[in-house]
Structure formats: C-alpha cells, structure tokens
Image (cartoon, rainbow, N blue to C red; front, side):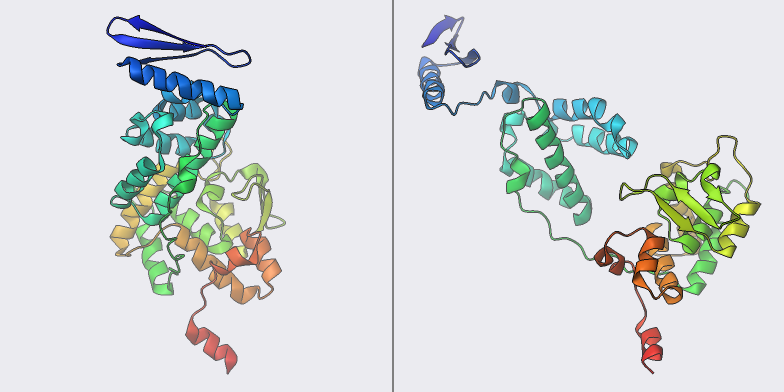
Length: 327
C-alpha cells in the first residue's frame, strides 16, 4: 500500500510491495502523488512493473562519462571514441535524463547535427549512441526502451570513388617532401599506402618486429575487421622500408593520428588537390592492384576485405580502360 506524506510544500509517495524495491517520488500536488501511486501499484499487481528511478536520476551525460571510464579503455579505438563522446557530453541532449531520452529528442539532435556534419557522420553517431544505450540497459540497470531504434536515419551517402591520377600523385608526393619543418613520415607513409592498400590505422600501428623484408611481408596483428592479416610488400615497398630510419620504440611511423591528419590536410592544400582524403589512397591502391591481381580472392587477401561486396566499393576502373579490354 502506498503512503503519502507532506514534506514542506510537497507530497512524498512511498510504495512498498513484497517482491519489489521501495519506490519513492515527490510531487507538488497530492492529486499527482495519488495518480502516480495508483499507476505503480497497478503495474506491480500485473507483474510487469520495471523501476525507472535509475533512468530518471541519471542523465545521458552521466552514462557517457561512465562509458568513457569503464568501456573505452578496453576498445581498440578507445582514444578516438573518447574524444567523440566528450564532445557529445557538451550537447543539450546530454543534459536530459535517460527517462526523458525520447525519439523526439534524438530526432532533434539528428537534425541539429545534420547542419554541422555529413550524413555519414550522423549515421555513425546514432549507431554509437544506440550501442551505449543498450549497454546501459544491460549492464547498469537503466530500464528504458532504446529511443534511437525509433528514429529515422539519414540516407546513407554514396561511397567515395576518388582515385588519384598519376599527375595528382606526383603533386601530392612533392607536397609531402620533408623539407623545412614538414613531417618526414608522411611521404613514405603515402607511398607505402599506394603500394600495399593498408589503412591509415594499420600503417600507424606497423612495427619493425612484424616486418620481414626477406619474404616481402608485413604482419598486422589486429586490423579493422578484428582479425590479423599478412600484407605482401612490393619491391618498391621493400626498398622504401629498407631506407627508413629505425625508431627506438619499434614503430615504423612514429606519428599519431591527429598530427597525421593535420599534416596531410596542409599537404593537400599546398598541392592544390581538392576533396582528397587519406583513405582515397587505399581506393587508388586497390584499383591499381586489381590490374595485377585479377583473381578477386587474391585481391581481397591483400586488401583485407572479408566480403566481395565491400571490395567492390574500393575498385574503381575507368571506362576507357575497360573499353580497351573489351577490344
């Protein structure tokens, strides 16, 4: 039975029922207190009551901060994820309680972000937010329905098909030349990317102990797919690696991702290259490797793709080249 008592100018309700935790809530009017008590007791009688006290007293910002501390350190991309989640903590959405995290609130956040970033970024943010809410529901007792599942996602953008021409490659490598205060690692990284189709993260994690110049291979203990991979190295890649200075910590390219990103942006500006991303070098490399490795299984083994559907997104042959093959 619920007990209602006066607390200063407010009314406190305490609902006790065997088999359920004590529920306490305060209201400004006695009518609201009685209405809430009746609804809670009715749900308890039906056996479908789920306590929402934790969801009402915890904000999304609290959940994000706990996720940063408890979960991110154990994730491969934890450092980058922490930066994104801290930025999300500064939004208006993070100030809402988990109980107030409705599809309407998520949709408003989606529309606001679409004015600032690309649709692909918003899609990834919503997916990440959905995963965090599900984790809070399973592990931390936040009993809410995942509101992200009810929100319409922005249309998925078309995959990029930017491929460097030979002339653009020359301009880029010239702009990456280590003169003055320019970073000396970007040019060899770009050449190795074009020769092997390795991702930026794979290049940054590459270590000398995993490189066998004699057998022309580079072993990657962990890749984006979550599996190890051994990458074959061309003669040009082997010569490049053989001439590189060795870093004392064992890494092949001692540079972090943010510094690499900024330095590459400046190089593209110097070279006059518009709308070029580092990942486009991987598109270029796979397109070129396809002419040497017409067997798709072999090509996928080099690129690290686990499905031919994803591999197809990275192969961009020109119509003129295909016309020559047709005859």
